[in-house]
Amino acid sequence: MEEKYIINQIEKRIEPLEKKCSYCRKKEMSLMNSCFFQTLYLEQNRSNYVVFRNVKFNKVSIGVPRCEDCKSIHEESETKAKKYIFIATGIMLIMPLLFSFSLDAFKGGIIPALIVLIAGFLIKNYIVEKIIINTDILSEKDGATYSVIVQNFLEEGWQYKKPEA
Image (tube, rainbow, N blue to C red; front, side, top):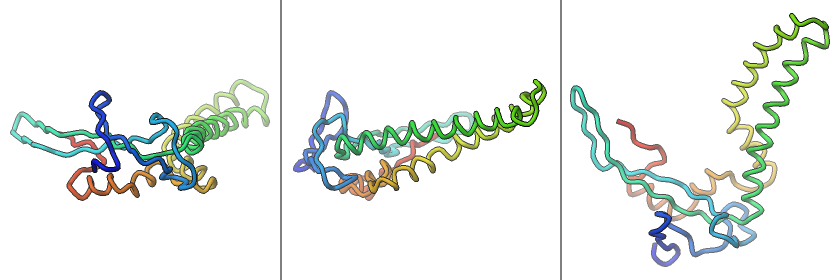
């Protein structure tokens, strides 16, 4: 671990020394801030009493090398997905007005628009993954999953989900 990664005590994270992007495997990262930092948790102690529950855990952020292009694609896919959701919501809100020019039709479009908005944000991650797949790079989660150091931590018992009491 000391060969390919350094421990940054100030930021409390593990930073990669390797520069090759884990997502496109073509370019190299230029700035440490372009890395994707995967957070992992390790449960230390769990107490389950009748009136009191407590869990103690360790937390670590592991840097996965990512070039500037992949970082911008990941960030833009989030904004594109949100735009698609709001456009669909707007269409559902305006659609009743196309058939009837009354205020009652507008009120009738509010509930379907809210349903589309809620459903859109529930499937937002799926939309983001589909946008990223079209660019031929790995998603943030997939690139971190294939990282060697993340695999080592997962084999030692670390997990993606934060432990709950």
